[in-house]
Length: 52
Ligand SMILES: [Zn+2]
Picture 1 (tube, rainbow, N blue to C red):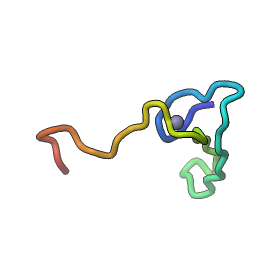
Picture 2: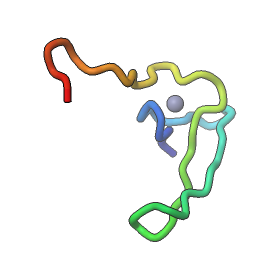
Picture 3: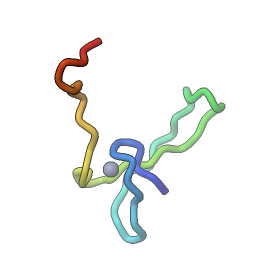
């Protein structure tokens, strides 16, 4: 399974959170997140010189 926060695979044995995502456009799916801090989480900052 893939962590939806950082996009990295969650290895077997690693603790994870499982969340239902009923609002998903695909008609509901389950998302997984690393329970601990993601090893390489996406930052919400924008690259230099590229702002919305
Ligand atoms: Zn993660």
